[in-house]
Length: 260
Image 1: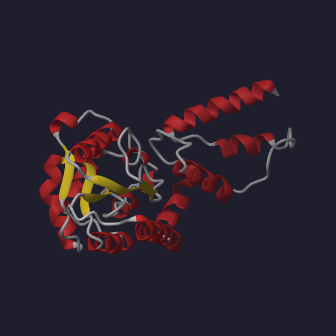
Image 2: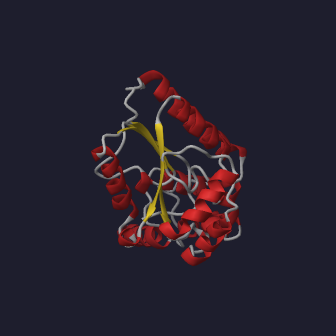
């Protein structure tokens, strides 16, 4: 029994990094030999648990979605449930501001949005690439970004203007490279975004900095400029953590990829 536990742990550790593990097959194969301690579950249960633990940041650093869960992740990202989950996050963001925000009048109240899968959706791209079931090719993804056809996430578009209407300065902080600025600006404008204070993209000097450190550094610069960061909306934990954050953070669902 102890040997089986060790083997199971090895499977788990490998899966957390590579994303191609199949714990379901392993446990299923053991049921005939030992039904004690194993919870009966379906593939849907397993994939929902994987998605939930990825969202909770318990599963980190995965490079691909487990192969047996690709269909489930794709169905979720194109479902009404995903839209409802994003809508509730938008409503909670607005509720927080309604209850807590008092404008200072000095123009230094600020809100930060991440870009991909927050303001703009990359779901059309990942739909062509197994919804994260294959390792992301950065060159291919950036070529798609250059086309400037990413759709707006509608509930975030609404929130964007509601926050601006409350008098906060809106900063868009993205891991996209600086050379994608023109395409990104044109894409944002084309789908309805206007009036942000600054679009912060990754410079050449930040090219090899991990996303969490890069974004924390950019937020620190804003704080040193006197801005009060009321909130951040991101679809990756790397957009929300680090040594400088906001009064509230709001995480949108995104189990398709993990940003370092």
